[in-house]
Amino acid sequence: MTFFTTLFIILMCIAAYHHIGYPLLLKCVAGKKQKTSKQTVFDDNYTPNIAVLMCAYNEQQHIAEKLYNLASLVYDTHHYSIHVYFDGCTDKSYQQALQAQQVLHKQGVQCYFHHRDENQGKVQGLNTLMGMAKYHNDILMFTDVSALLSIDALNKVAKQFSDPQVAISTGVYTLDENAPDAQKAYWHYQNQVKKSESNLGAVIGVPGAMFAMRAEYANELEKNTINDDFVLSMKALSKGGKAVVDEDVIIYERECDEQSEDYKRRVRLGAGNWQQIKALLLLLNPRLGWTCMNFFFAQSIAWGYANYFSLYLCLCIYRGYRHAVYVVTIDCYRHFVTSRSTSC
Image (tube, rainbow, N blue to C red; front, top):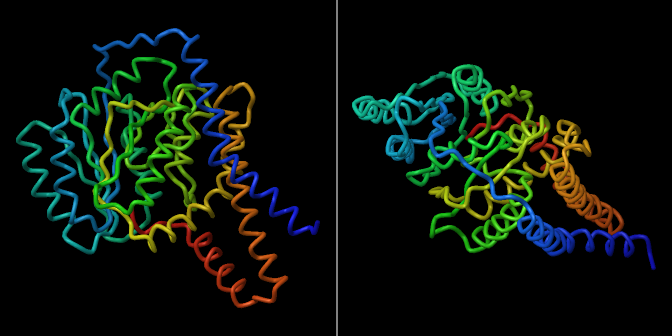
């Protein structure tokens, strides 16, 4: 058996574990723990101050609808506020948002805009919003302009955080009916995995379309951070606490990538997988329990896919496909180096 054959078999086993073994193991362990653990007691009267934060870059198609959606959430308007960072928009996003803001103010909803003429990237926007909101609020909820939230989302978030052990909370990510079938299948799979992880209080990676965290856990991101949502949420777990999915909270994604754009996004996220290993080494602390275990397995999968890429390069070199090696290498290098996102 040749070296390439052996390596290929090993990597195929990693892939099989990722898609079959890990979900089955999670489901089995989470099911046993659910039977033996005590039922969490929530305080329905807990009303924390919540800041809703989102970054916008050329979102004229969705910005007004999103603001109206946030204004319709069933929650005391004295206890939540909306903060939008406009990152050098070149369309009519800001103008449309100003019109919607007037309606929100008439309804008593606190809505604040932070406008920049030049595009600085999503990480800069997130750091700016967190710096302004974390000291005046109990909970920070991050959301995307293109994602609509179920009307009781803030109530559900408050309910989850009435449990002092909860550090991160999210909902069920649901794609628009016009989304490609491949993406629907992928997120159905992801939602099942995250449900099992949630039963262990250790969700690894939350959808950037909506997640909430305790304000004191919000730390400034490094400027070159690629997978900002993942790093931000996972750093919060390094201090202890649980990450959970509330299945009653629906995150409805209105904008879906074309298959080609989805591929580019996944290449970029793949580069971020390498970067976040160094940024999140604290999560490998055994005292973090299931968070440590799930993170270890998740990162081993990331390394597995990285190895698949390395194997591809080796095979191309072995077979003499130098042009293919050059194209793929340059493409991934460009996505890794150009880590400042120009869209949110």
